Length: 273
Figure (cartoon, rainbow, N blue to C red):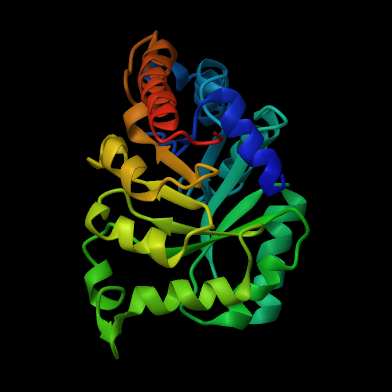
């Protein structure tokens, strides 16, 4: 999916919601455990309940890899079930020397046909560049994350700026707004406005709304640009909104609340006007 297609999708749906399928076998409703593939059964129900409200699904591969071959099969079934025309993200946080990154890129862009993959840039340009070489595919590079450990490196001063600012500037020189996004944590609202000024045109993937306490209002006010420029992810807040027989309806209700608020923010900011 190219940038204009993504922008058109956001405009059409009045939504910049990304639903995170971080599916934990220990947390899904117990009645699904008798299914031959309970993880896929859960994901299928969530997708059916939310596909008209979101523009993207993000699959955190850790929740699948931990189950070995069964997990990879669940992942493949899930990504194949997501309707064509929605933006799919492999949240894999890969990054290694060039020839290894090339194989990671082939895994997620060719074998599983995701639209995007998250990448950790610590090893530098040659670890990121192989992902950027794929046409109409997206690299989503870690920028400033919300976890406590981000203070260990990202928020350390490097000369007259923070390290994460150097990372963002370097990334902009490697990719373009057409193929590179940045991860910016939803609880980093005090930095979001400054980051948007530093990176005016690129999309941000913003995790942490819902269970992690990120404010959709603050994110939208600080970081929305003329094309929206945001994919706001909610995982636990949607997929675990309920755990009974009607869990999918509970997930839909949670997603619908976010989508309605997103439509209001798009209107208030006169996005696409």
